[in-house]
Image (cartoon, rainbow, N blue to C red; front, side, top):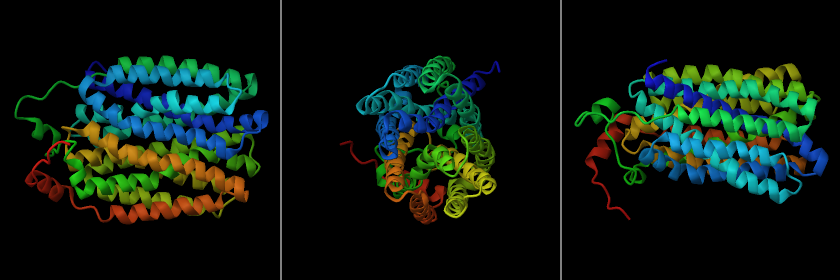
Length: 405
């Protein structure tokens, strides 16, 4: 662990563990907000959706700041504020207060956890981007496994307000420690950047002229609503089907546990089979799980379905960063990756709201699951139109750089 790249890896894992573990745990607080304030699931989903939208908007400047200033200062600021957001959430009494917290502090914390950590890892491990991205996202999975049961225990024992306060303080401390572990990699020697990245690069302003850039953005927009909606609504969905809150927390942990296999498997495969095929496999798994969610209500069967979903959920978070590097190299990786993430979170911000609205309107999540499945199917079709990375890089090299606006 003395090697600085592995210290950075540990810091990235801890960031993912804390940020996403906390986000997953929020779904367990929905019944408390409903019971105490009478707030609808549409409103509570809107709060999370607002955070996802802010996450996407800030991911673009976050990626650029990470490219310019390094990851440590960006993660230290956003991580500390993320934890403070949960502390303040423990004191809310009005809807506008929850909206403001999610629209500022929670969204700010989410904005950097992927684009900064994964871009930094891609720079530190140029020949093993896929598998190391998978290792980082295993940190996410461990957070999904470990934090929901802890949150459920705190809610049952001390109440939801104390639970949020304790989790928020803990999150701030862990994220600050993680940020201090992050540092930018040493600059490559002159004339060796293409050898080290394994791909030619395009500048951030060149990316929009490439068809593959817009295909990746559209694909992210289409499948990301599922990744944001299912974890948020799953706990309350299975509670509606008769599960206890503790068993619902276990269901969330199943997603995290299954996603470990997805992240590691696809992290290793994406380096070998390429981003296009990796995306294809992930989206097929996602489609199967969404179709099953519309049909299965038995508790035992749901655990199997959620495990399948968890595999696809985890794998999809791994393939994006290596695929961006595969097509565009590393010169402006943070900026390009951040922009692709923006389109994902734009779609992701709509998904939870519409899912909550569907339940409030129809008393069932089935129409929402069907819509999410159709969206994932369209994403799969788009992925199959991607060119080979080799030909795309050659086209990028041949194309002149358009003038900056």
